[in-house]
Structure formats: structure tokens, C-alpha cells
Length: 352
Ligand code: FAD
Image (cartoon, rainbow, N blue to C red; front, side):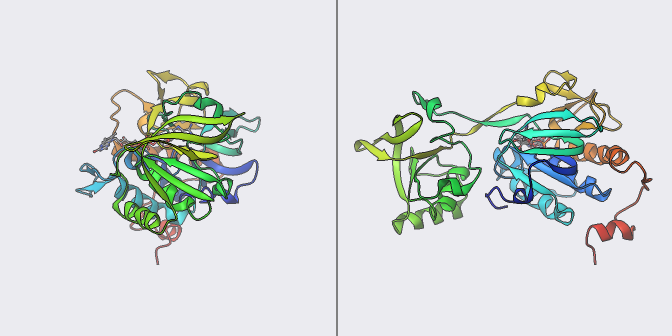
């Protein structure tokens, strides 16, 4: 999946309308697209992260999972890739790098949602698949950094164009730091990658590509740490970097620090839903919340006996979709069908 924010979102206009909005592109949110698609519900999936997979790709992309039915072993990244492949026929719209901040009921019974980027979307049903809550970037411990946030310091890339012709400083050694180094180097005026040691946690092929760019003189790699920011009025001009050789000043007007993420419940807590110890209380028939038309599936929900397992979330998605169909297509009766034998389901799946 491309790291650019146009992966589907480019087609969105202000106040785009969907049958369903799925909040969270973790494994459960992705599988919800499949179950909703089977019952003719078109979805938009929104995630604060810049890629799909939730915990699987953010916390353990290379670790094997052993309890996904029929897949004796699959890594977090492979599971995400397979889910993306499986949901392809339903052409969901994806919005990455945005957090859903508001969910409000409209007079017509549908919902109005707003993201922290000001994007407005309406939907007939809302499916919260927000896992442990929104991933929030860790702020580097640098004095006065808050003053530069949003103007010169960014924790995600919403629009690559915003970084054209900038003197960029990317800080970190994981996948995000490497991926954005590779994506932004061609459009930045200059790009420096700064990491505290000459070993990178990111995918080996990304490390290799980054080293090629360094050898070609297109990226500067510094091994060290930022110790001070210099600038005025929220505009960063230089940073002091401490290296083994001493201190130097690096010119930059756009810094992207990737210091990892923490999980916080975030705005979900303000949507008027009944909570049980920071999790959303749902029934076990439809996985619906106390608000009709708002569902919660996966790690974010709670009911007696809940197990925070991916397979539980998959089951919840299937039952949720049955009820969502009643709200989205009130005039249509839903027939129970198997994908093995139903030609109409196979048509939706593009089976030839
Ligand atoms: P998540 O994967 O947490 O995804 C939720 C997504 O919602 C996130 O991407 C988040 O950014 C997004 N989000 C939240 N709030 C908002 C908002 N307001 N706006 C926009 N986006 C938002 N489970 C197993 O079944 N088997 C295992 O072997 C296993 N191993 C694990 C190993 C580790 C190290 C960890 C940490 C977990 C493991 N799990 C395992 C648990 C499994 O990863 C979770 O059950 C699963 O990821 C839950 O999926 P989800 O889609 O509900 O939520």
C-alpha cells in the first residue's frame, strides 16, 4: 500500500457520503470491509496511521501469529497483505494519516464524522474498529518542540507536496523513517536522515535503498541525536546534532521525528458510548453499542467473555454486517448464503 494519502482519499470531496465508515484499518477493520461488502455495503476506512494493519504492522510485522484459522503461521505483515488482497473486490476508500475526532448523529438517522484534518464524511452506519485506541506519536524530549509542531515539526505526512523543496530532517531508524526518506528524497530540496546508531530496524530492502541514495549523494545520513532546535515564530531554521565527532548545526525547515507510538483511547471516549473500563460495551448478537447504528468490533469492544484475539474480531465483523444491512438497505431482505455455492456472492467477489 502506497504511503501517500491519496490511496483512495483523493477521490473524497468535502462531506463525502458512504454507506459505512470503518474507524481503524487494523485486521478487524479490514475484515469488516469484506463482510460489509458481501451484503452490498460500501465502506470508507479511516486510520490515523499512514498504512493499514493496526497492531499487526505497527507492533509486530515480522512476528509469526499461530492462531489464525487455516493459516498455521503468518506474520503480522503477511496477514495484513492477505486481508488487503481479500477485500480488493469491494473497492473500499481508504483515508490514512487522519484521526476521527467527531461522530454525531444527523437528523435523518445517519452519522456525521469529522477528522482532525477537517475532513467531513457522512455515513448510514459507523463501525468502530479502533483496537486499543488511536496510535499517538511519541514526542521527542526536546525543549520547546511544541512551538514548532504543525508548522515545521510533523509526526506524519498528510500530503507529500507540502514537503516539496524543503530542507528535510527525518529522525528515526524504523520503517516510517526509512519509507518517508525514500518517498520524500526525490521532492525535497535536501534530505538528512538522522539515527542514533548505524543499525536500522526497518525492512532490509528499505535500508538497502536508503544506503544507495546516501552513496549517490541524494540523502545525507548522520549518526547522532538532535539536542536543540533553533528558529523563530514556529519556523525551524536549524537543529543542533550531537555526533561521535562533536556537535554540528544542520539546516532544516521541516523535521519528521519517528520516535514510536503509544496507544490512547483518544476521541472515542467522547462519542457518548457506554464504556466498560475504557472499552465500548456491545451486545453479542450484533456487536452494536448503546447508539443504534454505531457498532464496535475487535479489541476496542467489551462483552462478558471477550477475548482480544483477531479471530474474535473476525466473527464480530460477520454478525455486525448482518445488522448493518438492515439500516443501510431497509427495503431488502438478506438471504443467508455460502460463498462456495452462491453465484451472486461470487459475482461480488469477482470469481470467474
Ligand atoms: P488494532 O490492530 O489495534 O487496529 C486499530 C486501528 O484503529 C489502529 O490502526 C489505530 O490507529 C486506529 N484508530 C484508533 N482510533 C482511531 C481514530 N479515532 N481515528 C482513526 N484511526 C483510529 N492476536 C491474535 O489473535 N493472535 C496473536 O498471536 C497475537 N499476537 C500479538 C502479539 C503482539 C506483540 C501484540 C501487541 C498483539 C497480538 N495480538 C494477537 C493481538 C492482535 O494484534 C489484536 O487483537 C488485533 O490487532 C486487534 O485488531 P483491531 O483491528 O481490533 O485493532
